[in-house]
Amino acid sequence: MRVLVTVASKHGATAEIASAIADKIRESNIEVDLLAPEAVGDVETYDAVVVGSAVYAGHWLEPVRAFVDHHAAQLAQRPVWLFSSGPIGDPPKPDEELVEIEPMLRRLAARGHRTFTGRLDPDALGFVERALTAALRAPHGDFRDFSDVRSWAAGIAEALRPRVHA
Image (cartoon, rainbow, N blue to C red; front, side, top):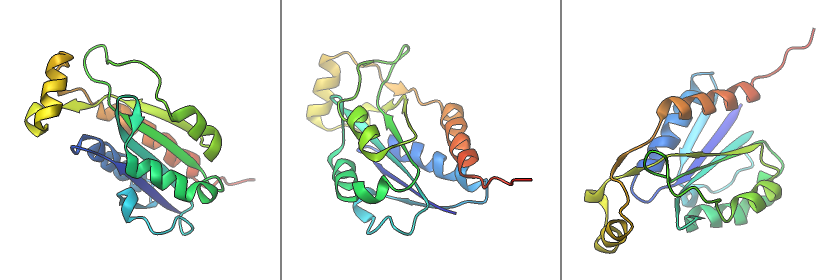
């Protein structure tokens, strides 16, 4: 069993979520490659794929959207899970639906989608991003719940475990 975890991350917080997912799946003795979408040449050698992205203004980042568009036919032929990262605060905001997710779930016949809370570190932002987050009064901090991330990844590993029939 070989799994690809691919993620687009602007400031690294979503990449850290992807790394936790990959590590948890590896604990089940499953081979996992963790790659940026633009580094993936082919998905044919993978038995399953986990695709994720940071979310900005309700959209996934362009590199992962391009990856899905390019590999959609092959992705639809294997188990696929999607995840997003972006809401911040307590309770997490924004809580609106993501623009691409429902069509992408159908197009890829994905087994599911999960949204994880994110991190907002003002020191990692550029000038325009700092101005925007200040104008929106976005809370700073790390709101990620890695126990939730690992639990979701454990469910993926369980779904990929070979079934023994008596």
